[in-house]
Amino acid sequence: MEIEKSVWNRRDFLKAGGTSAAALGVAGAAPSSTQAAQTPAAQTGTPDTPYPKLSIITPYSPQKLAFAAQAGYEGVVITPGPDFNPKLSDSAIDQILSTARSAGIRIISFEYFEPNHTHPDAGKRAAAQADFIRALELCHRLGCKFVGTFSGGRPNAKMEDQAAAFADVFNEKYLPVCERLNVSMGWENYPTEVNFATTPAAMQAVFDRVPSKRLGLEFDPSHFVRQYIDPVAAAWQFKDRILAVHAKDTEITQHVLQQVGIAGEGWWRYRIPGQGIVNWAAFLTVLLQARFNGGIAVEHEDEFWDAPDTEHLAGFPQQRKDGFILARRFLEQYLPGRQA
Image (cartoon, rainbow, N blue to C red; front, side):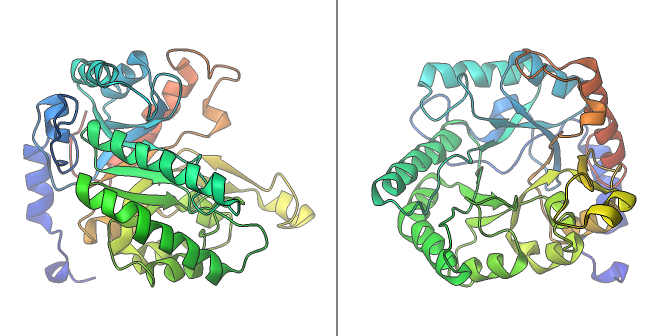
């Protein structure tokens, strides 16, 4: 890539290092009538930048938000739970945003994987779609711009039929809501029965039927690696549809793979960024070239840097904190923005 043709040049990176030390967040969402529905910049009172935002994926708790800020992250991506879900009242949302402001952290987006948008049972499908619309509304009320999800799944259905079903749901049900609330949505490429579109062919089949770029990808390179798909090539293919990123790596244990084959177990495991085989310099170059300015959220599923049976704790155990800290140190060398 010639430097002159890149949308990111030396001046951009020098400017980023000098001006974005306090910059957090993503582009603002449309305001609503509630106090909670602020622009993301209003969440913490800091200006927005055109650069990617290093974040962590975490359940909600004041302690975990405070740690994210103390560890030098710019935002958090929240997973659902009793204290954070689409049924929250306005007063509860006000309290969450107040907690984020006090911590100096921004809520970048919200994960909501549970609804099967294309469930084969009509009643369950309608309920799932109504539930997800409430998630889009929560996103807006929080002042965010993106909700992560899965693409849905129908047992034994052909890929093209699944793509058509998911595209129809988005075009008919979700797109009007996204446009009204000024939010977007996208699916993570995690291979599972309720998430059919985890390969480039399936993704392209969906996008061929959905012209609106309010539908995109929550791109996780680690899931491509264990499918033996090149994540960098996939990122180039869909660079204009990447709306959020999960920063997670995959380690391949070749001597185990040699014995059990790809249908066996134990030949791969998830790692924090930099401790697997993802080419992060090449992958992040794609994002910078595409002017991606959403959240790059560390999804910590690395047992080497974690303590067992600590999920119920309000705060992170030290070993898990160490994993998040190492992930930030590794990723920030490739990115403009806050250097903490």
